[in-house]
Image 1 (tube, rainbow, N blue to C red):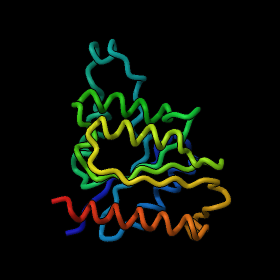
Image 2: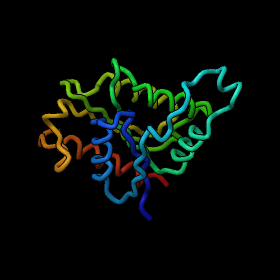
Image 3: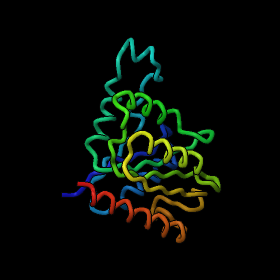
Length: 182
């Protein structure tokens, strides 16, 4: 029986390059069923303790958490906004984390980032790796794609052969983590 992964670009932009990368990358994982979601389907009021106390945790946060719990692994590509998480992701993260400390449910996780720049979203990727370790992720594989517009197209995916080779290595490592998960 194939494993299933939850995949998404951590952005609410309709033109998100991280959504494009997540979609392509998830299609490169062998022997899995992919549940590709859009963060726009989980838009909620901005988290505050007062809102939580007055109205409880929104059903969309509960549904997001259910998707995590029902998956065998996670694949997320992060948009970098001023060096950090996009507001769309941070808000879903904040609400869903109120349902228990180990948000990522000890799942094997592939974290990625891309940007048009030379660093490829490394600031947000480093932050995500650190934060996910603290919030109950399983083993983490990471990959950064710099200069997105030069190194990626929708027909072929990653077109820079050196970066493609690095991605493939990380992809195979993620597959091993998934297959080892009982």
